[in-house]
Length: 143
View 1 (cartoon, rainbow, N blue to C red):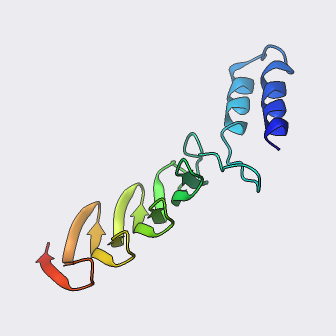
View 2: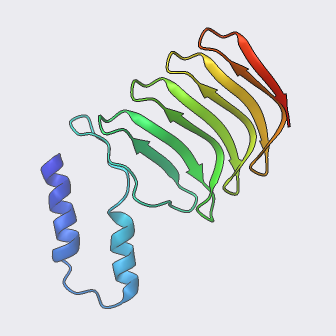
């Protein structure tokens, strides 16, 4: 599979000759960074945000690192999640037009909640609660 993908990339760059316009160059560049996943390869990170597209980013070992969605302006939108290398969820936050907006949670590597709170226009708002690694509340703040 790895050789097939390499051959496709080489054909895309060398098999088409010189592009006749800048538009053709852009079309080739947008095809190459797409996510490639298979059973016998590590997933490849997406190179640039795709308007309205999904973002998947991986740790070097192939484990999912970050996942989310872009709006049509290539800004984060909806729920974004990140993970530790061992696959345990690190955080989840909601976004609107590239800014944190809504519920946000962060976890310890053991899976326990580290803190929870809300954002509005990328600023902390309301009650924020912080926990220790065993789940006991250590601090509460109002913003």
